[in-house]
Image 1: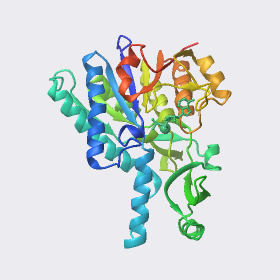
Image 2 (image 1 turned 45 degrees about the vertical axis):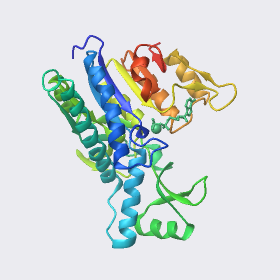
Image 3 (image 1 turned 60 degrees about the vertical axis):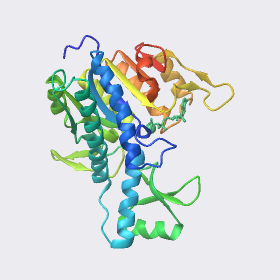
Image 4 (image 1 turned 135 degrees about the horizontal axis):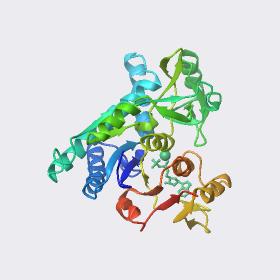
Length: 322
Ligand code: ADP
Ligand code: MG
């Protein structure tokens, strides 16, 4: 795809829809989606070809809660976690695609420059024997006491671990993504002038058996999924938007030092030294490193509200090849 260095994959954090101070009302969701839509619209005005992806951590947890309540009070059987992942893609995809479309129409960019905005329910291939299946570590859903946890574990095969904050919580594997099954459809749409929202929540994890796909119980890290998506599409830039201004060395200590620009080798060195927490900044840095090593030109980690400044080199952390 020819794109003059202006093909960008934008990854919104789960907090882009429900920030830490929001209650998570539907009004919060729409307000936050319009903030995201404003950023996407400005990128389109600046001549970028844009693909959008997003996290689903809070939402998968909420869906798991709904399922548990349904089970408790109405005896509605819970869905499997791959289905919950697909639900979250539909939920956030719908809100985003409507908000982005409305903004583009307002600025007269749609249907002239952009043909449409569409969400692709995305399945992402993972390894059947990914080590995370043996040692699931990602907490989702509500907290239980020990007796409840044991009962659910027997009944549904769910795995529970004690939560550092008390009580027991369901844990699920977070396998490493390999590739998106729908990548060719995504490419076709992008080439034909659509804005595509894809691989939400890192993609619905699936494994392949005898040429058939099967959904698995897990939640892929959205930053690692975004990298695979951006690399497969041949994007120039991977822009990871979150709730902190940049990545720090010695984060959370008085010696904290912001990282502005570094090569993938430097980033990997700091990663291995343990500067970035697993499950939050860690996967963002790893995604950035992988992206520029797979042919990407630039990976940026920045605060949602500084997206455009970060693209101009005035904010965020920039990871470059080398
Ligand atoms: P998102 O929903 O955008 O993926 P995360 O909570 O997963 O957000 O990741 C962002 C968080 O990473 C920040 O709010 C910060 O608390 C945490 N974090 C961990 N290590 C670092 C670090 N070294 N530098 C900056 N932030 C860090
Ligand atoms: Mg995260």
